[in-house]
Image (cartoon, rainbow, N blue to C red; front, side):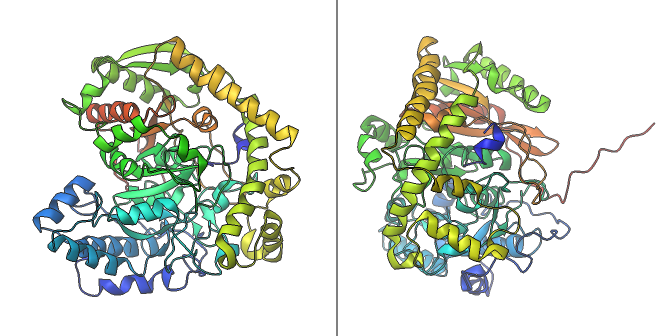
Length: 562
């Protein structure tokens, strides 16, 4: 989750090979820094992206194919940058643990390429994976909690196995809002007991949003070209928007959820995060299928959607990328805007740019108030968390450290209060523990209400009645100041309708307010990812609105004279 619903209204230089052993990965139970990730960052220095740290996947693949770069060289450069920015300098704390085997995996990729046997579309490409996704290697999977640091998961999550088969190099695991931000009504996004506080690379005292905070901040900062986040409601779209990158929340079932620490069986989904639409689309296609027998939602995934993604036609149209906007009918629900003047101004510029590119803007629509939807959603999430967490812990077996239920996790937190709950408690866990199972009348009624409000009378009705390709809305307000004492104070954003419906959304940079990134979301019906990607790629091409991070310590008041 991006945040609690109730508060929203609810390396090529010598010696680099030792970096992994010197990182947090050398002791997975140690926090990312001695200050627990809460101390002030050092004064920022220029940290521009370069031909490796800022390259697209296509550029890296071309350089690997020509021999201009090696997978080991790329991995070393990125590990150097992580060491320089995550552990020292700005101290972003985006990476919770580095993969001690990353350079060996990269070396194997180089050997396979020399032998003419690249294994997949991401062969040799580094990627960061959120720390609630199981990796059956020497890294921990903890959801940011000290409770799950007894040992690595026994096997890869389904999507991680797919990732390895694609030839990718898993560089490390990223920090997150602990337990994906469904622990407390007063939590601070980007903070976990294990990883400390992730900082926004654009302005360090601003929040990176969550719960995929570390993935968004790491990709934006040039730690890797690709990252994987997870979303229940906003946890991909919001941090991607706030950190100025692209995020895709797929239709629930397009990517498997087995082997991922759960919140909601009806809403959870992993998804790609990248600096460009093309890179995010490439990763989406690489992991979209086949069906996973451990995740029934994947059995219903659209074969046509998977085939279209496999052709990657969202970014390889017959003409230039902006051709994806020509003739597109885009609806604007005005009740999803109006929460910040700078966001409203950026939205108006975006609408004009898309009209000029040939899109048809269907304006002044409304999806309706979200209060009833968010209330029903919370009831569903609390029920599904209690049920799903027990199932996940059983899958982990002995590596779950003796934990078998939500009650066990709560008891651990109570025993380790000083480390686990120094800033906020576990009120939402406590509420979830009082819920019944998934046959309870309260759960079934809340889930039916969610589907009616988000799908039938919400997105389905609006998309169909106006013959729309997608709805467009601002993804986020400018990043707020991080406040560990009082928790998050978000002023606006749009994720709930798509999240509750289980429908896809794509956020792409729309501009910035005083250097703080703003995103634009394209939301569609189930299995319309290829169309949304084409629209987002077109918008990206005509606006080029992404701004690189500046690692400012804080916002500086503009100078003025009498």
